[in-house]
Length: 197
Image 1 (cartoon, rainbow, N blue to C red):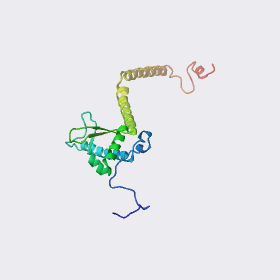
Image 2: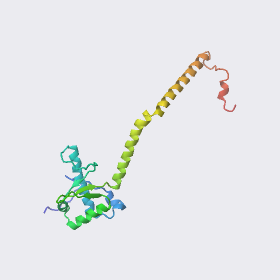
Image 3: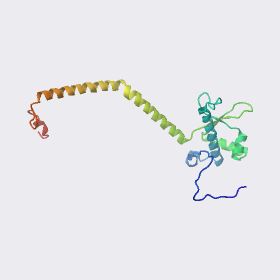
């Protein structure tokens, strides 16, 4: 066994290797039924899911997603037990809790084959996904519909016609009233400046 070695105030807290853990599993009411084993299991499974995503980016032959495009992991029960240092009954209980919270689903592959494990998104992950989808949809609509819609083209034509009308009127006004320079104004124009008339 190694000696107990405390952190010093001069140390930096860093780990060679670590797993992500969603903080909301500790704080949200919906996840209060999760035991420490279940929360740790979810973190271990998401770490394995990260490897499944890496298989895609590296264009490996074995891909961990189904025909719908849903990602999954394959993790044998005895391997998980060894990884988490828990008995089979504790593992089964943790899996059941995660299923109750819609955080995992399993699919049997067949005799002597490990189950396929699908991981569900947490509440905050789902909210963030919806916000991203809304933002993407709004950006798409603003590019396509605001710029290319028939209404915007009509509006552009209408505005250009108005501008021609305004410019023509201004030019004809200038040509009729060029003799009025400096402080001299056309007849009747001063009357419009008084609000109380």
